[in-house]
Image 1: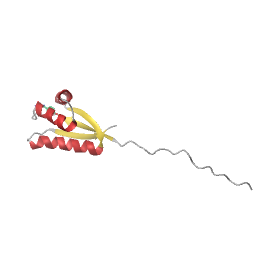
Image 2: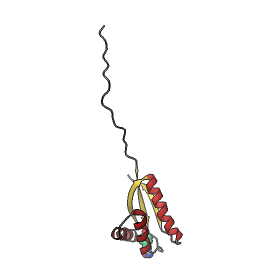
Image 3: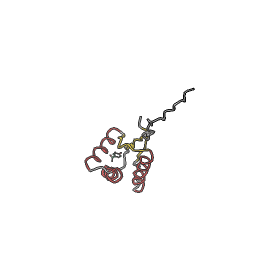
Image 4: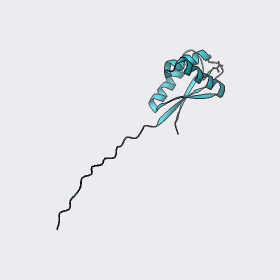
Length: 101
Ligand code: TYC
């Protein structure tokens, strides 16, 4: 009987799945001053004045605006941090997260 030759597997499939991403969404309200919203966007989401102003105005006019997309942990931490900044000044400013489709 001839020997069976077993060929070792040489191709390895990489198991590098991308982590699911989450959107951070800014919600409009009637009380938080525009300038304060801009300040929070700059501080927490590292936007410049121009970007922050546009995002604030989009939320102001449409009710909500997607700010950025991060991994779940980062998205939730930033949303909480930004919401807390508003709360500390007595504003109802609110940031939420949602999985990206
Ligand atoms: N609507 C607020 C005002 O007129 C400003 C504002 C904008 C608040 C965007 C929240 O996400 C927001 N003072």
